[in-house]
Length: 461
Image (cartoon, rainbow, N blue to C red; front, side, top):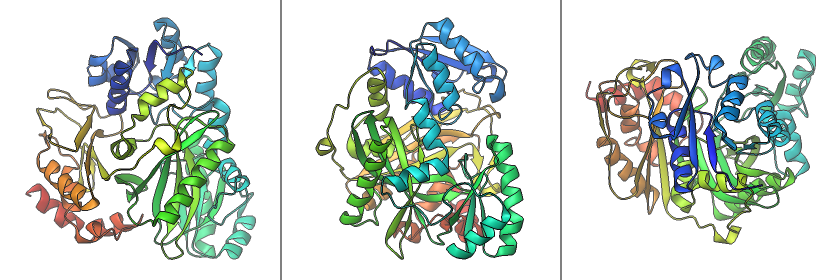
């Protein structure tokens, strides 16, 4: 396999910009595909070539496989980077790209297929000796089996979409009656969201923390780049991420990361991927839940503590390269935090707020990074995810990183549209968050209590 010379970027927004910058660093020419609504986005302005796929609807542009393959063929690009979301974990798309004799920047289609299905991934984890949350061995076959399993596991339990992600198709049940009502709803949501109604059952950990391990492999060898904590979530969507996970002791951290490498090696993983776990503080135990076979939104915090450019490494590996570092070469230094800046109004139940960016002022200084998909004069379209950019900071300690984040947020201005900046200004001052006393349910509870008032104070309203 030859090094990549020309790369088609099958995504939009800040991740497309991020890929553009990594490609430019390697001297790779770029082809940016866009919808008609994205002709003027920042990534399009940076690209060597731009191809318009079709109308704004993602189904007719960024998810339109035939149009993407035509763009790949017409542009003469020899590789595709799918970013995250859209077709990044679509095995059929990866297989079609490879069938054209082009490079899919990521794992092969069989790995995506195997690890993208939560039931198959769970079975692979068990075979590799990686602990999993107690639950069904495979897809549940009906209500009777689900009720029987729930009785064995113990309530509360959670039904989850076998082919799902992003929090869709998930229902928590505290009683048999709730479970009986939840299964048809979860099945319908899974079918609508993923084209697959399959469900499986897991124990629900009441005060779980969400920990994930970044892995990098070349199909032969795999290393880890330490772990991140992503417990601050709203509607099971991550809002705030940190690296490393401050609550883990060295022994448990080593065991967690070793399990991620063991599972990745078992599936001969190639590229950047993430093993996601739930951590039970009471039992001091971790459980594998799923693998994301792509680059993650929160990858910058890992880059900040390791100094390794993950997107650059993905491109080099995809072009036939081997891992350029051993596990001993990977060092974890300091602490990093990322917050997602979305075009949403957190004081009004996170109402989407697309519109014209008239002013853009980005914070500067040591340990501060902003991965943006916008510029002054840009009009945020209403058709896609509302992420505008990610503010990332690093410090020698978690306390220093928190203080640096507070200062950086004060230096960030995106106007006049409402953004989630005020949410993060409120969070960074919260005593419980500063003490690390959070779980996957903490943010939603906070928003139902003191959160809205704190957000309004932070926004000056």
